[in-house]
Length: 577
Image 1 (cartoon, rainbow, N blue to C red):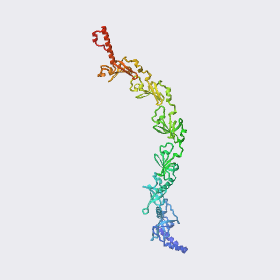
Image 2: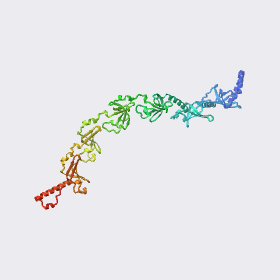
Image 3: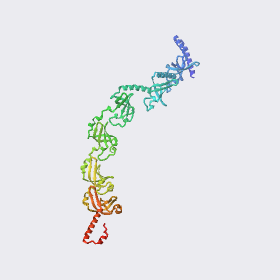
Image 4: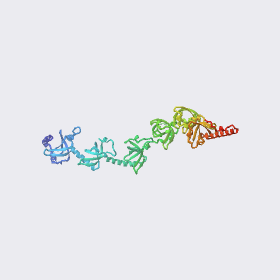
């Protein structure tokens, strides 16, 4: 149908040209005659002029003996609109000509592609750059429209990995051509090569201006636990975490993010190794310069708790200045196991300045100093010898704690509970909450110890033991313990004397348990007394020997007087208690 319509139009055009041939001068006829013999090669790109637009094709005059036709679809955009007008000059490809039909078949699209390929080859051979638009993500990279589809590998997109690759789609950029194969219609592009050249040029420029103390601008490239790497323009510098702020920085990410543009100071530039140390806090005044004057020892300050460790809490007094409240400075009376029991991060607290060390950048603070030290007045309030009354707050293996004042407890050691009783554990005598009386024995403010005694409420029975039980006196008591080396005899409550096995008499090599029993009452003679050692030495043997001597003496006396008969001597002795 298109051929028939084209032939019909050609006949009309030919007839019209014949009717008007008389109006054409000889020169024009000569040119037309020469053009009628002009030859074109198939596959050649030529220029032509649009002379007619039909519903299915466009007629283009290329100066050949026959006009050419191009399908109308080659002139339509995405919305179906025809973007061509009569008189437009365009480049077309002569695909082939049908002499029998008198039709020349042309292609505008193929001419454009040939032109694009010519440009691609030129750019590739001249090592130039070409503009293109990233149109889609594909396996291993992107498709780029440079007039024809080209491939951009993912490794050639940028100098560094890109997290959001989809964001590149639709962007127009310049590229280098890495590979170009016209026969296979294969083109490989690179953006990285361009960036590397730009970076190298920028690097040389940056290295030329870097010097210690210079303030430069850069972009945060990478963040680690110990610092931030800054791209200064082809040269990377390290901003260490200790040079970020005069104050505390937990992690570099608290201050900077990748992509941030910041100003930094060059602290040291190792030109030989091309290493750059940077500082950020150095751009601001050092707050520690006047700390001693601003926070004198003894002054009260306010701040916020910013960190807690096992040994104390750090308080920010101002940006870049922190003080430490040691756990030992939190309470006069309570043994604080962990600072979190007293303060929390974020708390606004008041404290007293205890010490300032500007060289080491340390300020020691105290919480307990806000109130009077109760240990300073406790000695005046309860001098040694004072009798106090309080409740048992705690019972341990070694003694009893009695509440004195708020936060202050006194200790009654197990050895100060009784002068005479053997107490295995204080719980045998006391219960929690029980009200007891005790005497103040000693107060140690430095060690925060308050010593009490209960037995001291009564006189020490051992102080008068020598008067009550002099050497040579006879005592009576019950056996409280039987050992391999002798008998313990309780002569009064809590007072025991020892009858050594050598002082029992006629008991060598015998088992004491066979001769004596616990609780048995015996008499013995006091042979030594040591109040300092709280010991009394007793002897049954000496008492028996003394009594035998008395009997013999009495017998002798009676015998001389004739008062004793022979029968009296052989009669058994009366049993003694």
